[in-house]
Amino acid sequence: MHIEVQIEIPDYVNKLMAKLNDAGYEAWCVGGCVRDSLLGRIPEDWDLAVSSLPPETKQVFSDYPTFDVGMRHGTISVLSEGHTVELTTFRMDGVYSDARHPDSVQFSNSLEEDLSRRDFTVNAMAYRQNSGLRDPFDGLRDLETGLLRCVGIPAKRFSEDALRVLRCLRFSSTLGFAIEPETLQAAMDARGLLEDVSRDRVRDELQKLLCGTDAAETLRRNSEILFSLLPELAPLASCNYETLYHRCSVWEHSLQVLSAVSPNPLLRWSALLHDCGKPACKRAPEKGTAHFHGDASESEQLAGMILKRLRFPNRDLDRVCSLIRYHVETLPLPEKRLKKLLGEFGGDWVFELFSLMRANLAGQDPNRLEEHLTALRDSQELAETILSRQDCLTLRDLAVNGKDLLSLGYHPGPALGKELSFLLEKVLSGTLENDRDILLQEAEKTRS
Image 1 (tube, one colour):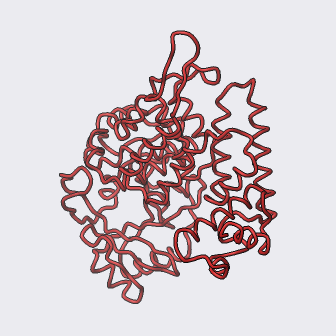
Image 2 (tube, rainbow, N blue to C red):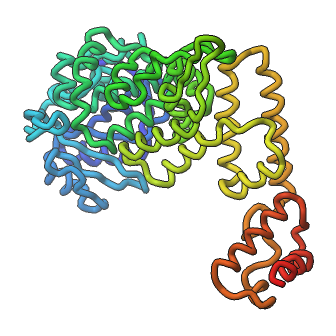
Image 3 (cartoon, helix red, strand yellow):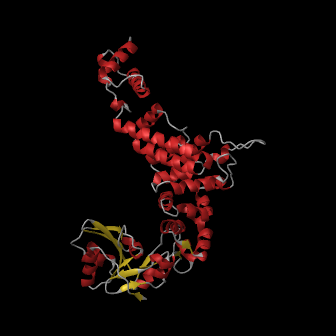
């Protein structure tokens, strides 16, 4: 079906399409770039489906830098005006024995056959100028009604590539689309196949899902799929707080916090996992309210295990775990404590912590919410003041260094580092000014 719509294609893509057309081949914009353009969004990438075979594609662009990123599957990357564009030959996929990649592909001369192998109808549209939109599976209608629907038989699509289960949830989260019932049931049935998918790919899809505008609602409706991947989170759904501050489940509270923080990837992970250790720590006496002593430490440890399994870089894992560890800090934060956190983790981290704390407070007792938010605002203003004053926060900011202490007779080694840390602690507490002469006098007294 040809549909008259207008999509603005960047010049660097148009040049590639024109070059292929001049050589006698077809070239169509396909997939996400078409979908996003029709939604009024700016596509991140532009992909082309072409009728030329890979060697023919390389010959056409012999005067361009090209990369054989997926030659076996028909994909050639071409660098055009600083942009990488993937050109993939029309193809039909063979058997997916690993539930992830086709064992083989068969090149085709039919655009419709190529579109028929794609995951969802909204991703199975093609466009080129003067030909309009090619939409054999009513993707435009699903786009207009906000529906995610598999191309063809849903169970077959998910059995071919198990990662499509998470892609389905990710698109629901980022696009705000409902999932067509048969597609959703097939995704549920196929969730066990995700166990064999690379943890890196699972991590990346989950992260995109978490950063979507409808992330909380998507996870609320499809928690069983997430719990099959992260079984440590399943107990949150049946664990109620039963405290003065919360009356919902830990899972519902976690989703509320998730939706209340900005779509910063590591902040969203922190929100999702910030209370994951609570079920293990819950103690509910016969009289009184439940308590969760030690839950921040338990949550940090459990979050670390989850993120490590998902192959997070150590730096990102440490950042998430530290936010979870400190999100229960008592407010308002004293200046000495705030300086220590700023010195250890930096300003960006501290303001991420405030964001997590604010979102966490929003789900608590409304009668005390304003009191807590006022204390949080006071802490944030104090942090801004400390940073604007350029206070001494780290050893690098200290007015003396190791060479200065060596000149006083200190010897290289642990004692020297210990003395510098002692002086920094004095400065952070306000006991000493960050003045070179004053600090040297203090160091001289300590040495003697």
